Image 1 (tube, helix red, strand yellow):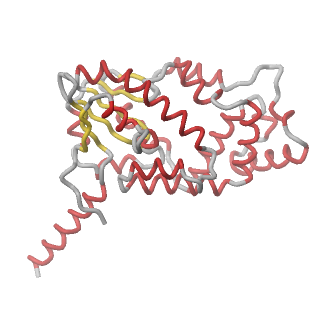
Image 2 (spheres, rainbow, N blue to C red; image 1 turned 45 degrees about the vertical axis):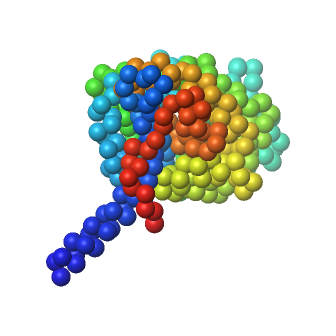
Image 3 (cartoon, rainbow, N blue to C red; image 1 turned 135 degrees about the vertical axis):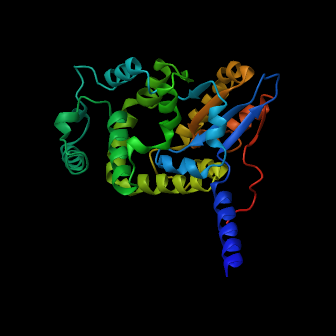
Length: 297
């Protein structure tokens, strides 16, 4: 019985490693002096998932810097973002809704956030939308900000005095968060998210499940596809893809030196317009670190 148990254990472990799939990539070539690594992340996945990604800590240990979308450890920048989330004193968000809509939004905020619309009406609608969505994910996907894998390596780097570099500057981050869409559309989107919260949860759950299986290309299809009725729209995805082209240029000096550990949301990574494909088009060699695990269940 014991040999049989060992065989079963081996098979289960092998299948488990296979389902960790391909979220960690090695970047080389184009005269780079050393290897760099790209880790696709998901905000709503617990940091314990990192233990299922073979070699991720080994690759991180080889690197001299962390490169991410926006350096969350830059506290001055965070303060600037919070200030940018405020509407001008002359603008009150509640004035852009009918009485019926105001009451509905107010009730939604009370139930989900424990705050009234009057308390939050100085905030930009895109900020309120994200605040509301985050709370939904805490309720339905058990999202824990303190245990999110998304910022794990950034936090470790800060503790070890390893440089953390943002691909976007503060102005670009403000634009992406607060000004990417016209104000009137932001107002409509806030109302829509509160009217159909199940669409937001369904979309993020689907993306999270695809991520856990390493299906990065399918994440791109999930966002691009006609069944996506969440606030992460196709127009948003087009902006992300355009930004990927700019990111490849900004990554170039870091990749050339080698030793960069790049962590970015998986939504930017896969698909024919994703960052991996853009890096390959630019002449880099990008391949899965754990490519020997090919079987999937």
